[in-house]
Amino acid sequence: MRIIPAIDIINGACVRLTKGDYATQKTYNENPLEVAKFFEDQGVQFLHLVDLDGAKSSTIINYKVLYEIATKTSLKIDFGGGIKQDKDIEIAFENGASQITGGSIAIKNPTLFKEWIAKYGADKIILGADALNRKIATQGWLETSETDVIDFIAAYEKNGIQYVISTDIEKDGMLNGPSLELYADILKKSNVKLIASGGITTLDDVQKLRELGCEGAIIGKAIYENTINLKELMQLC
Image (cartoon, rainbow, N blue to C red; front, side):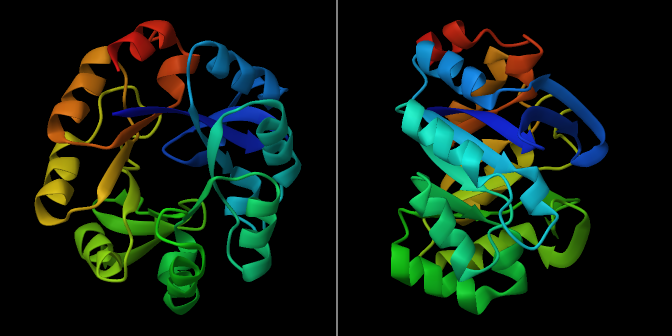
């Protein structure tokens, strides 16, 4: 199972939120490149980079942070937040993203998102399936829909999606364990490469996700708050 540390960006700084609430912002480092280099030094190969400013706006904002990390580390970056138009996905790939994650666009403009899958390939496009009470949330989780997360994933699997990042918003940043029941349900009802995100707190949580069959695990606050030792985690996986 791939270990994918997360860096969330607001105003160019590395931050974390709780349940996606921007009012809970906690800044961990003003220099995201320092954080990325620390991850790389611990043996990390992958990075989940989220433009939180972009997520609640109409376009990518922090693409310069993406470029700096992509050009000054060897990390393979999946980038999300603010990718809502053709120019946004072009900016992301031009600035070093290995993959992009589309969440809001996938529900608000499915025709365009399907065009991206066809144009760039299913290995480059990740479906962001973030849910509150199993209903898909969009716009940096500021809006919720009536779309069931399982149905959402199933529909896009038919359109070629292979990678899915799913966050249970109730678990995000709470450090009380991941949504194992939700992930088990997704894996039972689809054949996607599922990347778990939200609530991962201990090495035992990681082991349970691996046993479920998750392809990857995105870990943020647990690393920043030292409930998981990154070096031990990399040895485990």
